[in-house]
Amino acid sequence: MASTDPRALHDRIPVPGDGLDAARMPGHWLLARLGKRVLRPGGLELTRWMLDTLDIRGDDRVVELAAGLGTTARLTLERAPAAYTAVDRDPAAVAQLRTLTASGPTEVAVVRADAVQTGLPSGSATVVYGEAMLTMQPEPAKRRIIREARRLLADTGGRYGIHEMCLLPEDLDPEHAEEIARDLSETIHVGARPLTPSGWVGLFAAEGFTVTARRRTPMALLEPRRLIADEGFTQTLGIAGRALRDPAARRRVLEMRRVFRRHQTHLGAISLIGTPTTSTS
Image 1: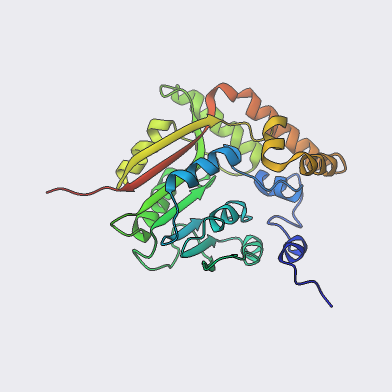
Image 2: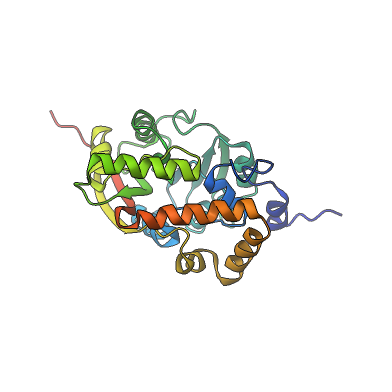
């Protein structure tokens, strides 16, 4: 008889990017194929801060945009909200997310859709969040995604959180910012357009949110200390072993780490929490 253990089912489902050439696939899916499950610039530390500050409670209806492999989803489900909906456009990610289960009364749903247009009802959520997604979008798409989050949120009591990459310092020369964006895009094979902290705050304000909390941490995604903190020692050894057995993957990972280190003084991770701005007349 086949196993019905959700963890066993999860292990048999391909991760996004399976079947693609390691030399060409997006960097985050390459890392996922190697076994990395935390793919956020500020690691689990910043994700936990975001969730703590969003203050998810038993009466909340939560929507996660671009939910990916479900790592943050599981942390959210531990908080037992009334409802949790994962949104992702990648079919392999959706298959992973459909293995999610809740131990409590939480109603769990998975929707295959783009974060720009989820198809979910307006005002149907009290909490919306997304991680490591807006950075990869040009500004018009960033704005449309934040606008969609605003549409989904209830006018009263709604909270929106993001966890993204940021550029430092605030007055970073625009040409230097372009160089960093170009280097990131070339090495991770996905367009990368991080903003300064004030740039992210300004984007929130322009799309109808007031920032109520923020936190910044180093961007150390591929540093040994962060890997162990996020993945655990045994899983980190497994990731390293798989990379050693795959020369193309190893070259990509080392190149990503070189680029991150080259720009480490100008790269950070940031989380913002916002509430819908109350208009006054």
